[in-house]
Length: 152
Image 1 (cartoon, rainbow, N blue to C red):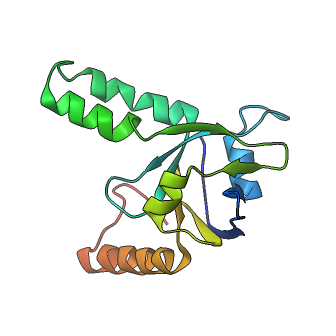
Image 2 (cartoon, rainbow, N blue to C red):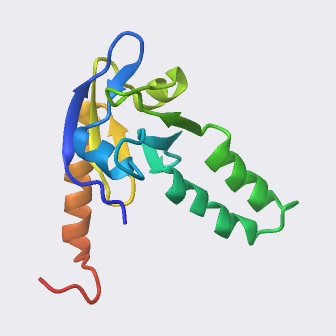
């Protein structure tokens, strides 16, 4: 199972290129020597870019297929998930080019934060990433959130 862990900061160049952190590239590769493939999309809940391994993104189709294909719910979810999704492959240096619409959505300029979330990672503007991590920790603490059945 792919695990994206930690928080990493990388520079975004004028052409929109950025290097995927080495630990994330390793998690994205299906086999040694293969390119890192992923799907980028704007988060529909947060001002960041979501990065999904291809297999995890394709798995989103399963629950979507349970909805009536002609229903408003199906159309809304399909548009939200797929209309602004960009399948990408990293170059041999591990760089990707972020589409301008995603750069604008996340409010990125010259630096971006890669935040591991286990099965996916997110790309954030640095100050927004700091706020997000602080807010998430505070909400988890105040709600007493734990993982059922987990042992320390």
